Image (tube, one colour):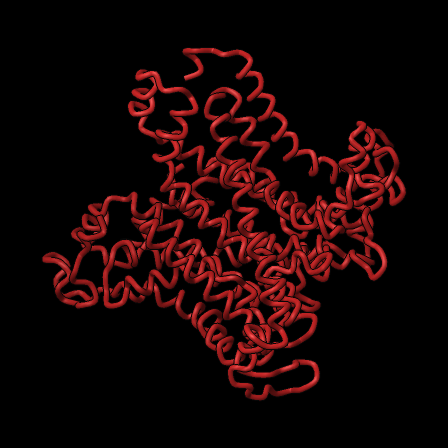
Length: 278
Length: 312
């Protein structure tokens, strides 16, 4: 539209608005990275410090014996990887069944599954806490993986459905005519075809699980504590330990940044769960 | 498409002509593993929440709950807790949830319209703009605690330094500005969600229709209001419902940025209220009652969304 009638002022104005919003999105993160390299005094300097001698001691402290941040990162990593693997596997299976089959109650079952995507975790967290205490799942990585998966199986189902619906049913039928059983068709024919979709879904699950706080916070106390929960412990009774907090935040951003690079193109589909093909 | 499914599944032996007598795993078995996780971890606790909501139970002082009938519900709706619940928690929830969704929608729509005009630069803008979506609520809570700090935080220092000192305020710690600050913080992270979905919708608009309006001499504003917006409305409704549902589940940023619910409980929205009741006061029965209210609200919205978007 604009190419035909170039109205320069409007063009520059709108470009300025976009640049302003883009900068607003990135600047706080940049500011946090700067803060992680400052001393506790420099962090609150007047005026705000942009040029200073970077100090990496808060990063080295993180991995020292006092904070032992690697333990929490490891927990987060195991939980996020376990959750993604479990959710994508089970979600794809369910999506296959719901897109290909129809059985008694399948419609309502699917409605219920999909609605779980929006179940606020606070609704079930206290009974789940009591249940976990009873079954000895409190403060275990497995416990958190199972709890995260219940929120991500519906998500994976939803997203994988969008991918599976794009596959012509003739493929299944051809495989089954050639003598493959339904399980074989799914494993050997369908899964390889939707593998890119599974990778995207797994990466979204990873991001959710890596960032999730409330469930991981209530269900862990010591040995399975994840990185976000550890971050909250930098808030003491009187003050916040800003340098360590910010360096810990920056470290926990690294896997997210990798996922961001990978997922950028799939964001629309992931966020709208395939509602809008993007 | 879905109507043409093989009707015969589940009934073995009727599969197809070729696969004859061989046993076929019914489709239900593909769902069973998910059910084995979801039932103990969601269905059972949900049932338990309903049961707990009729109990009086302070988790710290007594080991067992005592049956309380509908008193928890009565207290929140008519009794001694109603002033807090109906007078503070629900209005705070409504203003936060609706305010944030509305702001994000308006910004997202405007930015998508602008980005759609800038075909070349749009990609760079989008990359920068969506980064916050990936951040954890905890990180954002602390980051904004630092940025909004009244005396030495960068926001107020910048405002004072650039002669806009009048605009400097106590942001999240003052009663009057706590709610707008929370809404803006959420918009910083989640406007990209609205933006991306609306932009994808705009790109998928039937070009001939839009161009026909242009040829017919409709002004840009008229085209936007009478042609583009109506065509986009199905997508906008879906996006708004997604966002509203997520906002009802919104907790983590508030937990950090507004410890104890913010000034005058301004940000103690319903989910945060339930968390504080259960995790700070240990009133598990009352927390369960609030959870039931929340469950009803989100389920109504979720089923409407699933129907409306034809997802199931």
